[in-house]
Amino acid sequence: MTEHSHELSGTAGGSAKPAATDSANKKGTVWWVLIIGAAIAVGLVVWNNSRNASEEQEPIASDKPARDVPYLDGQWIRYSAGFAERNKLTFIAAEKGSLSPVVHLTGVVQFDPDRVAAIGARIGGRVRSVTKIEGDRVKSGDVLAEIESAELGAAQAALISARAHHGAALANERREKELANAKISSSREAEVAAAAEASARAELQAAEGRVRAMGGTPNGEPGILQLRSPIEGRVVARHLLRGQFVEPTLTAFKVADLSRVFVELAVFERDVTTIHSGDKVEFTVPGTGHKTVTGRVSYVGDEIDLQTKTAAVRVIVEDSPVPLRPGQSVMATIHTSARAEPTLLLPRDSVTSVDGRWTVFVAHDETSVEPRSIELGRQDGDRVEIAKGLKEGERVVSNGVFALKSEIFR
Image (cartoon, rainbow, N blue to C red; front, side, top):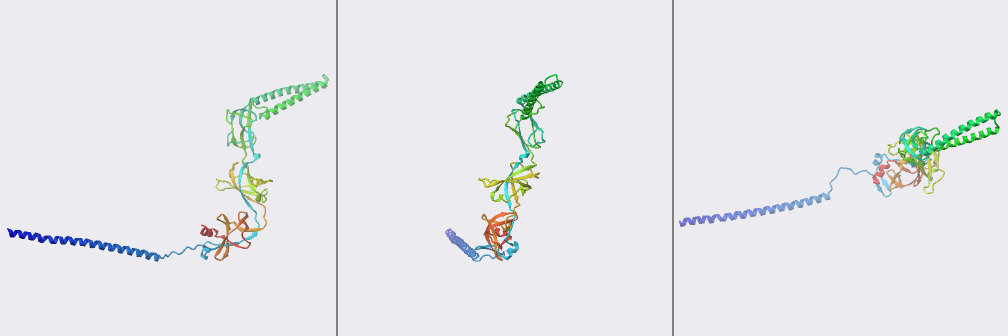
């Protein structure tokens, strides 16, 4: 039994040593894996940094060609022959010539004073009826409204009395004249009768005039004032209602014939000498799709306003294809008939604005130009006068101005 116990004991002791060895081996393997992983990571970082540095030192080559655009070289704008050909750059020489100046202004539409009527009650009263309102077309003599007036009624009653007195005086005058001719009465009585008839006739005329002055008619309905339109046109304003009490100062209606209107312009004194009666004027009316209305200058003011330094210019427009409303603003272009003295001229398209200054591109050589500021004078729509900054014969870009400006002055 003792021997058996020793055998078991020896077997147990012998199996414990190999188990400790396996555990140590596993720990060693893990450490080696960690060390190798760290080495690989460090290597990747070093390789990536060297690759980035290499890429920075050696930029990637591109097959895309550089843009062929103008550039500034001191005071010159230089460009390639290819750029000039693509944009069709052409030049023109500044030459002397004369032009008919064109003046651009803002105007205001006004009524033609001869074709507008303000209609009101000349006496106080109460509105009995209104027969016309804004927008209605009326003819001369059409009734617009009726007003009840006691004052008019009294004047019409006095007129009726004056008629009766005159009728009696006229009959007596005829009778006395016949008696005088028959030697039945004296000529003195006939003369007295004639004087009485003349006095009664004067009173009748005065009574009729009083009724007309009030706006009534001698044979009209007593006490009823009819407001009538004195012209043919359109009711553009109404300021009374049925039952309203009106005063003599009230303008009840405004009627206008808008087939002819005036456009009032304020022209600066530097331009007014070039404008004459009969000059053609073109108007652009806002909100009509740039439709053009034409007219003629009818009056050029003889006085310059000291505050604004402008003179009034009146333009007549008849039968406009676009409705023109008094008070409306329009853009006006006056084509003057005056011929100016010969001066240096350029096409309008050869001039552009750079930083708020008028500029032209003056030719320097075949592939460069000079941007030069100039001062403009008058213009006629197609050409402009060069007041300062350019000499006769100098060549400037006339086509391709926008291409040069857009590339250099962004």
